[in-house]
Length: 457
Ligand code: SF4
Image (cartoon, rainbow, N blue to C red; front, side):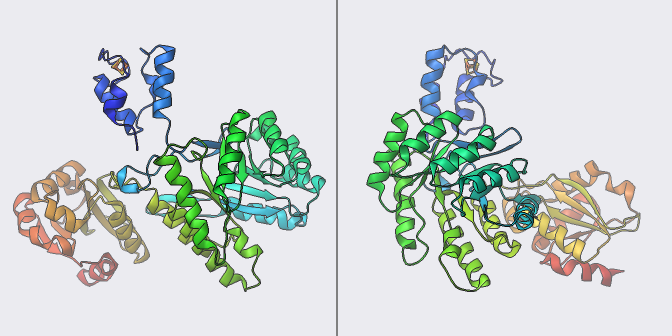
């Protein structure tokens, strides 16, 4: 379970000196429990008190940072099994592999595809997070050459080889970039642990389908002083997918509920194995790979390695990730105010909507695709949709009157007619009374707004 504000407060100095920027130690404890402030901000702690609190605050799943400088990705950090209990932290890192046996031009093309893959959803640019270089050739020199080719890539690296000699050759090139080493197995654990310690890099432990053995080997790595470990319990992409999920869930339960130190690490899944082990056509493989990725992401995968890089395969995966890692305690909102679409002038129509992100970006998309020319007033509804904010009272005449005044829209247009969403019809009279504007009830669905505006002209 996550640590309560009271548990933290008991260990703070309780002087309410406010040097942390909060008015009291209790306020600071509350922010710490919600991961909104850093412990370092309390400068009144002795080193021992700091260590005790730092230990208490360590998340159930330890955070592992891959990469350095401006190209890093952090995985892990979760405290709970269910998102509604708190929130999930550090979105699942989505990684694409590239094989070291590809001809130079294909290798370069694939890296570019990975770097350029992105799309926008609800105002956020969704991208990939890392590049996994796979030692498919089995040749140490080729693996080192591949590392050389990606050393200036935009994303952090995962180096994939079970051969310690090949891993060492790649680490000699990019070991200073803090790549994730993949990985240690029962057979190579001594050599891989030594490389991870020597280069101070995070290390993946691969133990397929045997959590007892995984615990034992994780303990071995910890005893050697390794702190940044990633666990791969195996991704069985055929009929074994149920066992894969069971293992993921069991590892996370042991971390969160039992605080078992051998399992308090991020989990890695490899949907890419589906493609490597299948002779189906590319589209079928892509659909299955994305489905497995989504399944694992739903059940605690902190990092996934994909082979497919087609945008149609990545969109559902990245969209699901965005949804899962949205904080359920904080409604997603855009800034309230006045927005312009297309060419506007003093005769342009004025629309009203709320500042719930999904509502706003749906309206924005519909207005842009319909080439509408209009002003849109965005009302502060604390991130609530139209129907919810009407019911909750945030969508009301007084608030709209204030918005009209604050934005200065009356200085920009001659009209005094406001088009409100169809779902806000029940408060149209109230808005008219409080604003003095005529209110027209527009469509319930914003996709109909461009046509509605055309008919008004
Ligand atoms: S700086 Fe530390 S002691 Fe001072 S109010 Fe903040 S938490 Fe309390």
